Image (cartoon, rainbow over all chains, first blue to last red; front, side):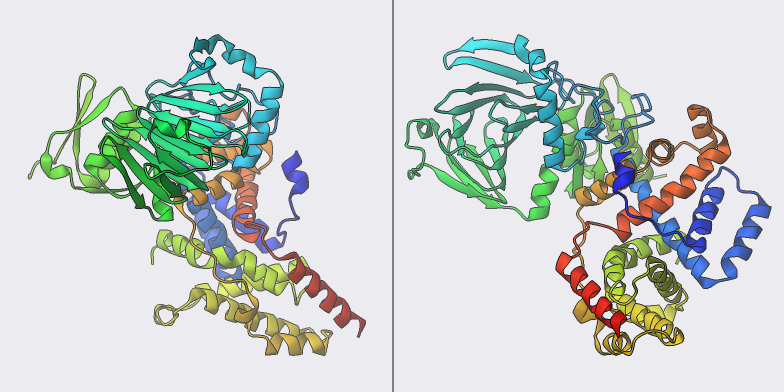
Length: 366
Length: 195
């Protein structure tokens, strides 16, 4: 294994080895009283043994947090969920059908972007682009490609210029690359763009009457009911009306707003409103790229609205007193069962099913 | 503290500095086994503190490095062969001045990425066993049945896997030690050895 060869020699003293053996022994279903007594004798004979064991026990406990990315119970167990990318992939990196099963592609999670992209490129070289040619449609810009996801779906797309697009739940884009311009229309939903640097071909994202222009940067665009939200993760972009398209690419007219990393803008008919977000908040908002939802004291109403973007089954708050509950933690957006079980166990909220709705109610007083 | 609270404290306040601590100690000990011994002994001292002593500690980072320096000094004094230079250096250098600044806390994504990376780096069968145990919550017996291997083999995978994960998560986290510092340390040691 590559990973093994690269690894440094690990700690190998006797105490460390024994501590690992004890941890594994006590991790069995029902360690016997004999084992427990023998463990105590072993541990108490030398404080360094207790220390080595505590270090491994702390590691073992920390590993439980990986359950935050546990796939939904409906998905089959994948013995090798964490298999590294880089080995010949067993799945194509994206599904033209949009619906992207989480268990299919653990490589998409949390991998450093560069490694991830290398893997995607080699897949592309292998001709996987062929799979999406069925989606070519003609429009007024010449030929454009269309990509869409269904509710709960996620798709990563590498464009010909090596820019990448992450497509969130229930979203659609149309892509038209010409020698003068790289143009993406966000038809609905949310998409994040990592734009390959190319000064000669501006990268333009349009969403309704809002247009975002970039050269090489990372940003996110989401269509809301009557406005468009833009978050800049790296670099800078210009936001304005469609006349950006006609303007010289370096100019910024009074009707355009310049946005840099950490800033977010809400663009609507009445103009562009700019705010600056803490770094942590940007990371939380963009956690969907790792197919996660991350909350930090968000109101239950907001949390429910987020989950409802990703699921056909809709959460409904029956009790107005619940809307202001504060929720923290990470969740799989498509794993409603995990979320509702937290609501039940941690907040005493009652959950019952009505058709396609999951109704949340406060626990009764008695 | 309950064991669960203690484990959480250990991971959050102490183990996150282990890589830096090992880097610091590597300037005085050539042998990985010596460093390992000093780290274990230092943790043992920390864990044996009573509640009032613990409550008085204002910075666990500082306390950890000071304790490690004292353990290392004891060890060097006991081993009569050590060079006086090394001893003088050890005694005069304030451990904290020489260590990288405190690591910034990890955000949720980074923390998960760290865990993900630790499990992903395991050898094949070991990785499968830990995936089933930690991600899916299967028991060792269920894992044995599922993978068609003996329960004792699963136990061995757990024993080995947890050690590798500890190393990956804490001992070599980030691998950001400055190459220059390591080179300087080697040069100093080589010089000390000549004398």
